[in-house]
Image 1 (cartoon, rainbow, N blue to C red):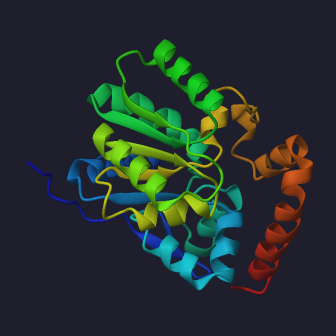
Image 2 (image 1 turned 120 degrees about the horizontal axis):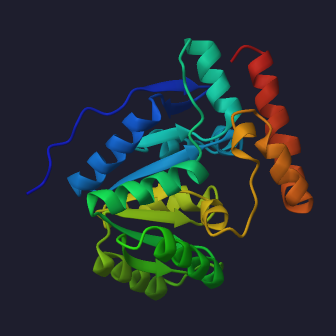
Length: 251
């Protein structure tokens, strides 16, 4: 028996992007409500990079705005919502929501599946789950190749996910690939899909984060830049500057 859908959480505009505004307990409850509906849904975690990708790509902008939820992953996004709309909006990064949702899934006896990430990352991730959440039902952990998949491979992975039949499907393919993948397969996967990016690495203990006391400050991107300067310098130099310029222009 399917659960009747509840009213969606409110969204506010950050430039052209519609971002979900709610307290974290409401978000967690809404995610499990989406999962219970078994209609197929997807949740984005919107940081500055994602918003600027959407500004440059109308198709991706539509994918972001049609998400069942688009949570304020980055501190600059949360700060924008606080100041423009006078809301007590907290940052809600995928790196923080992943462990919360896993613990809650174990408590509610819901199943989870993981799609994306390298094989050794998924092994480490499942090892932590086995140690800390032994009752959590993990129905699958799939590491597709980084290259473009053939139609046959795509169909095989979809069949594997549907055979696993999870309540929550965590997707880690990177932005914007993971968001496009979730939107594309919303009709064929009945789980609530969550595009969590680098969260597999941090949960598995393979990538460090700022100490918890510092995560509320809008500086975690600087910490990640220090860890991966070659990969992230261009992204942060361009996207953060563009975001700041739009804020200063009053958008």
